Length: 139
Image 1: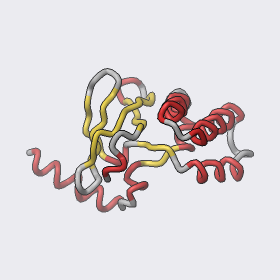
Image 2: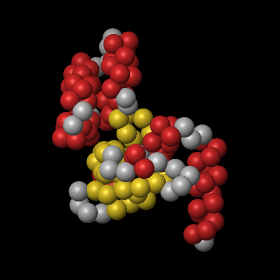
Image 3: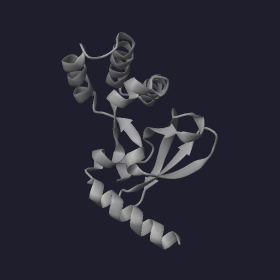
Image 4: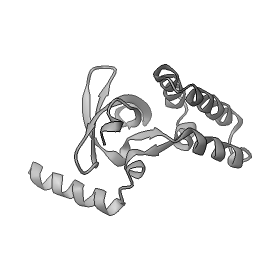
């Protein structure tokens, strides 16, 4: 779980009509169900890991791009291809550029990202159980 600290992630910003918001993962709870995210406005949020989106592996994304190119809108394809090229550089600044591109294109972001919970291999049942336990402790 330590390897996710400092990783860039996207979340849907409900206060701004579902636009994407870019944050940095600060840490995860031991079960991996809650994620602390820091944002550019210096706010920190604790969110369920199934709402936090991280980039797919560059090889997986490239393979999906090749196999799904006919179904994608031209603009989304261009964004996704650029994101994949930025992933190849493998630097923090290029990953930041890739995430900024995805932030402005929700349909491309949906294609190029995966929820942190699925990246961690958590089942929906584990997430539901953990969320219920946290809610009970908060009461």
